[in-house]
Length: 358
Image (cartoon, rainbow, N blue to C red):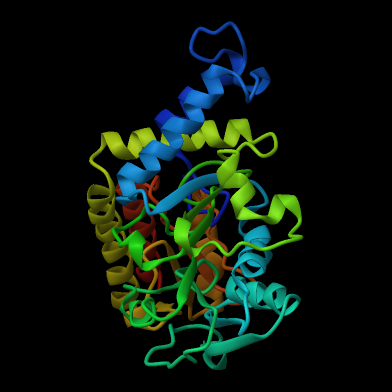
């Protein structure tokens, strides 16, 4: 039976990427060696790293003003590392929109003054704060562009762009990087764990504006962005497999037409699913309509008996990974780049079938 994997992460990968990655584990490009045993200093991997950076720049329209890095530690390490590098005199300002931004705030407070500029915690994070003001003296402002648990997303960055000329802007894009067009120049630092829209867990993409780096003494060596730039993402042994699979994903994305093409596909998928949620009398969406995520669709079924029936029908039809996070409950369908339209359509048909059983 075909499985439709709606897991929030690690998420599905494009089938051609999995096939190519599988072959590379046995032998990488007729080299006589497995990808898992090649030297990260050898030409084979150096070429993988350089192409990964080059395609990232091409797809996102990154110019020489920014540096692309592939590090380790996930977004969780970046919560602390970003604050450590960008804290100067006044501290950081955070837009609290869910679990991951809250975790970033906890880490920043270990370093110094941390200001929660705006928060949607009053409604259990079912919306994105708007119209907020920030202190001109902040060293930086930090946002999480998409919230996997609650299913909310900054629809654009106009709220943030207002501040980009007077303070530095940091963004955690772990769950919607490469899903839509945006202007990298509006950000001083972008970071994203690979395991949503890029590759398997292990690699962390970091995009940093070169002139935003503050020279600091006595930073732990691994936590200093400058060291990683100087060493071209090879300050220590990089996560070879994760970066290679990320490269395969980037090649696939480039081949199908880039960000504009995948954004149109993502919009089509999200529209289909949200239209059914709004139409179906058994189903209720969690997030405020104007702030709905294009990547993570959260919803509940307003009848316990029907909720159990929905789980049963999903199991019968190969729908997996759809259970909602315990913070919200209900259900969550993650429809990242590699999720095809047919799988979303299959879920919608099950929702329609459920309604007929009332």
